[in-house]
Image (cartoon, rainbow, N blue to C red):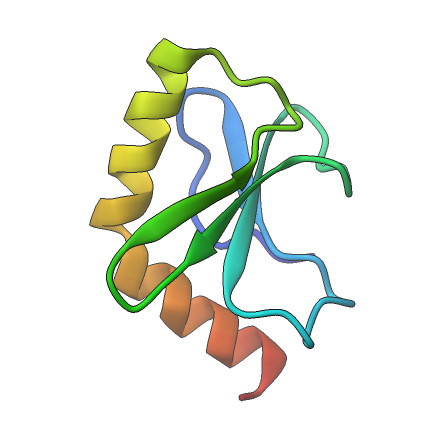
Length: 85
């Protein structure tokens, strides 16, 4: 489970190794990574919240969403590089 981006606002951004059958997405959690973290799909047009299982507060979610949008190309490159696609 590599970190896809640097930590931001105390949150980690990462991939899980066993999710190659899913479209590109990134997990977000504060503290240690968990399988049940907040998930964002990375789409051709932007990003889409899949769930907010980490219960990230709205004011932080807005900042994280913007951060992900600004780093979308980097996330996609890291995803395909990590999964060898």
